[in-house]
Image (tube, rainbow, N blue to C red; front, side, top):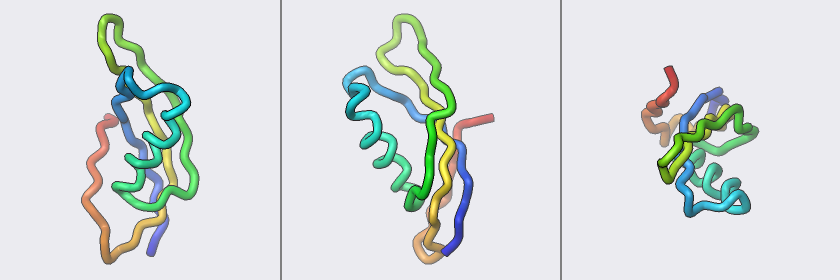
Length: 75
């Protein structure tokens, strides 16, 4: 096992309320590993669109036996 720092960009659909956002983020982070710490670092609103972008920084515990390739969307 090892610890990795990742920066992720997620779409936040309009149908997910602020109260459901934590579970939405955690379910997306679990794809990459077990989240130890994470934070929303910024968000972007697009006028006329039904989603917004949220940017996450996370420290994840990665099991090397089950590691998946992680592709982040940040430049």
